[in-house]
Amino acid sequence: MSADITIRRADLTDMSDTLEWRNDQLTRQMFRDDSEVFPDDNEKWFRYAMKDDRRNIFISQFGDDKICMVRFDEFELSRFDVSINMNPSWRGKRLSKRVLADYIEFLRTFKTVELITAEVKNINIASKKIFIASGFVFVREDDEYCVYEKVVVS
Ligand SMILES: CC(C)(COP(=O)(O)OP(=O)(O)OC[C@H]1O[C@@H](n2cnc3c(N)ncnc32)[C@H](O)[C@@H]1OP(=O)(O)O)[C@@H](O)C(=O)NCCC(=O)NCCS
Image 1 (tube, rainbow, N blue to C red):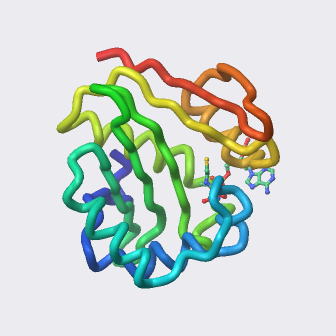
Image 2: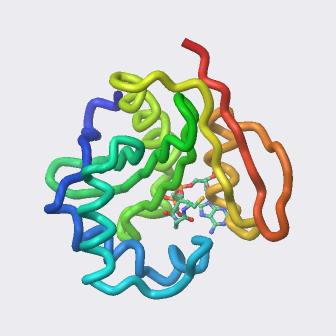
Image 3: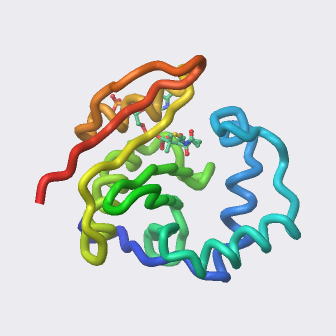
């Protein structure tokens, strides 16, 4: 793991920051559901997700600053779908590839990981770049989305 960046599991103290990042304009444009998320709905979702062993939500920090959130949803045993959202104030610093690699390493410390999939909007150039640079391969195009996969070897 990169020395200056730490990763931990998300907890309820991350609820408002991650809601703010989720409602950021670029995030909404890049996510499948582009509607604004309201605090009550977010709280329900977040509390439920915290108890669901198939959802693995992590936060990376630089010192006390939260820089990024990732969610690995285990849709089948050892198979995960990934979604990443960088704190808007920390975007454009070329940190995403390194943070994604750290997240995968962190996930592997307590889960068996065989496959990770990512669904990315065609227009999301930055996201496509980081998945390709991180060893994901293009699998198919579904309407306005590209699907990528990474086989993780133990
Ligand atoms: C996708 C995301 C995590 C990337 O993080 P970032 O901090 O913006 O990107 P980085 O600074 O690490 O740059 C990653 C690469 O994308 C490129 N890039 C960044 N913004 C770009 C843009 N607007 N257009 C084209 N390329 C861009 C960078 O140059 C870099 O490529 P390089 O290494 O070949 O030079 C971040 O933009 C984000 O959270 N976006 C909103 C949510 C989202 O789209 N999530 C992904 C859903 S699948």
